[in-house]
Length: 231
Length: 244
Image (cartoon, rainbow over all chains, first blue to last red):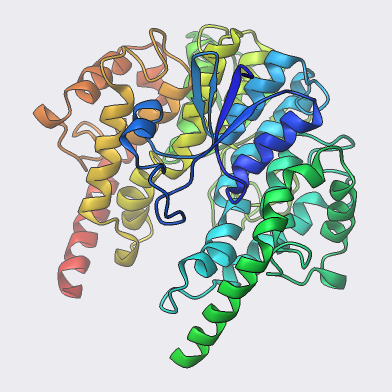
């Protein structure tokens, strides 16, 4: 049994980022499938008393690293990087690290809004809560600017910032959930998405997303029809 | 340009390497200033106001946007190195100046602090968003619902628990950030929350935090602003009543 347990699921964007980092660095881990109650019909979910005993905030991802419990994906990524010497994705240089931390904190009120704007509404399927195109456009425009002509979000090297960002932005592409057209309006993001897709661990980290794609497409169609009916 | 130093002699001949851009009324700005004051790190404070566009003052002025394209505060310029997002600034300064007391290098302790710093955005930060910002911007529709605000406060009470500080036995950057959101609500500052017997953990912690080095100086601006804020609060409450 691998010592590192990750609670979460492939449909949880921040969980994917943690799994990807582990896969990228060959860190064995056990994924214990745990999703929010509103997403899953299973008995075990983030509101189960057993899970709340581990993480009272009922969020995923959460890790149990040989008894050390930690939540918040950004904190998890930095902790694993520190423990296992992943200086490539979380640099030791104080200024480079600060640039990564700056993105990790900026992420919450910006990039993270993409899932509630575009992805969750389809999962919820409630026409009274339609997709928020305005917020998504604003965030993606900001991301295009933040990235600029840099190879990666925080400079010349891929960092944990890119993993977190990709798991929000990348899922919108046609090969996954088909929720956004990047094209010529987003040259920086388009370039970066293509580079990120070639990184070690990308395909395996997104296997669950690919598996979910047909079911998601169904939900999306039903949802779009319901939204039209509402108009 | 205001120069802060915790010694009583103004450091006019020192080259100020660190500039902090922000406003005393900005909670995360206060946390950054407090950390510097606590560790006697001299800094130059440049008053910078969000939504304003004037040169030398506005966070929307092109000169400031070069440092922080989002026009938020605080930002720092440290010997030419620009950085924003208060938690990132706090961790950077702590690592650079080896403030291992408030940001230890032990991996697990550091991870616990980072967990709080990330949790803070979608939880503790709701307090300013729901109680202070609506008054400052005279926008009744931004006012947080009592249920949501009580839930946030209950979560903070739970997060702290019976620990001396949010992340364990020692005060950390997490406590500085948290206090700047929670502490400002007390009667001696903006008078927006009754802590009392419903919040024994937070009450205990607030009292301890108030005695920490740098607390009073970091909150001088808040005390100065208090009468003006009380005026704005009264107008705001009247506006909310009219809306009903």
